[in-house]
Image 1 (cartoon, one colour):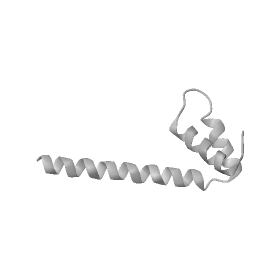
Image 2 (cartoon, one colour):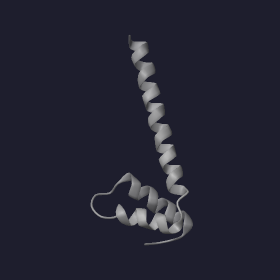
Image 3 (spheres, one colour):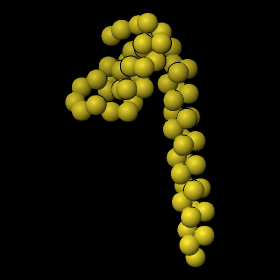
Image 4 (spheres, helix red, strand yellow):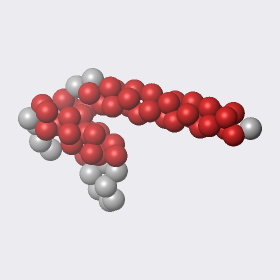
Amino acid sequence: MLKTRMKRLAADQQRSLDRLAAIEAAVATLGNEDLLDLADIFAGGEASPLHEMAQAEMGRRNIRL
């Protein structure tokens, strides 16, 4: 039972990591205007992972809001 649960948790974790990698790749492939729009949408309120991803990509591209 424990081995089955550990395998299931490992599979869930891998799916989560794959999904996060896909999101990061999608943010990286956005055009500059779309990236700026995404950063602007998530700029207000509390800090969010999407805003941080957009900010990091903007830093790589040397663009600002």
